[in-house]
Image 1 (cartoon, rainbow, N blue to C red):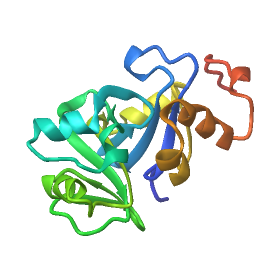
Image 2: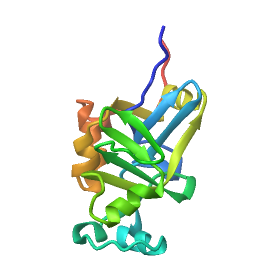
Image 3: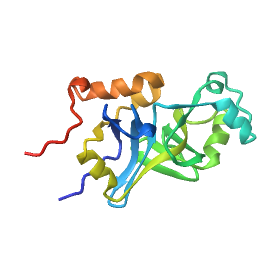
Image 4: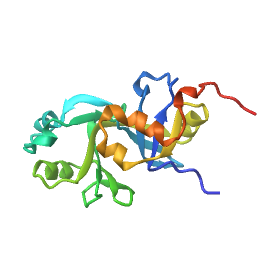
Length: 186
């Protein structure tokens, strides 16, 4: 039997999520396997605008619509490091192709391209990521901490941050307020 892989899925924090970092979080899973999982929180703006971040790394960002775009809090791991989720995947120095034409890049060359107006068509920039050791995510799912659903790139790239959690919940096809945080075993 092939192990469950939730790569290219959303993790939706259950309404009873206890960890304050993850309350009402929507996580996009970039990688999930025997070794653990890695994803980005995609609905929590960090309070830093792209223009500020690009200034900090000495890159001019002249593209007006991007200057005011939010950099997101991607998670508590490596919060000083940038992660760019983007489509199309392109060819960058350090990328993980998540699926078909969606990739996660951590090398500066993608940011240089963005500053020069030749970056990916769709992108989301985070500082930090969320990580789980082997078996940890599976345990959290069985403890009813997370709901999972196949990711929709339109939610990632086209919706405002504050709408993403509810839009991902809607993909499940039921009213999440009816959920109980209690774990039941038959």
